[in-house]
Image (cartoon, rainbow over all chains, first blue to last red; front, top):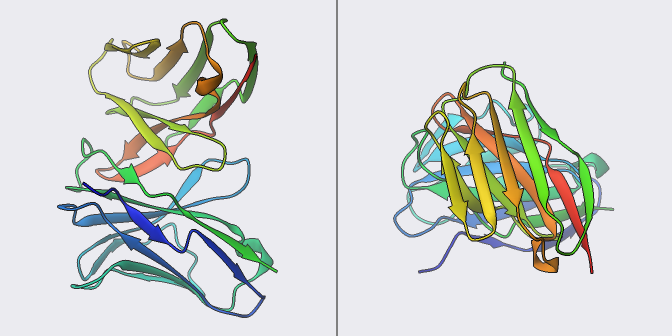
Length: 115
Length: 110
């Protein structure tokens, strides 16, 4: 039973380019969450999505960042016109439901480096 | 909003020594989860605690949720080099939003 999958695992972009991060949830999970982790820090919630719906994007910067979870295919976190401060590890998590007792399982992350 | 402080920030121990990390909240928590993240890795779910005063054990790891549900601890008995990593507590704000503590980075010296 495959866990949460993320690709790419490492991504290097130059300032001004676009970064696309993909996440496939665990089988049977329809709830996806994205978190950002800066070096030596904890994880910060960015966005929560269900299929075709953004439920909560309160942790996501208003500009340059967007997320989607289409009916078919993986969830995508898109960062446009990347800047050096976007360099971080981006983790996706999934859960079977959206309740407080539903454990979130994390993918291996995408480590984004902006040159 | 709720504030969760995790202490200590760093801990170095000799292999075989015990280790404890604490998670303290200013308000009552509905539940708390613990995760371990190895260097360069991703958070791996360890346990969830829900009940007041709950204690759960996993081999050498003991997890406790305070009576007032405002604090939690993770205790490792006789640390091993495989215990190296960062231990995070997390709680749900509302129904789904996980708020993570700042983590305790554990180094085990052989």
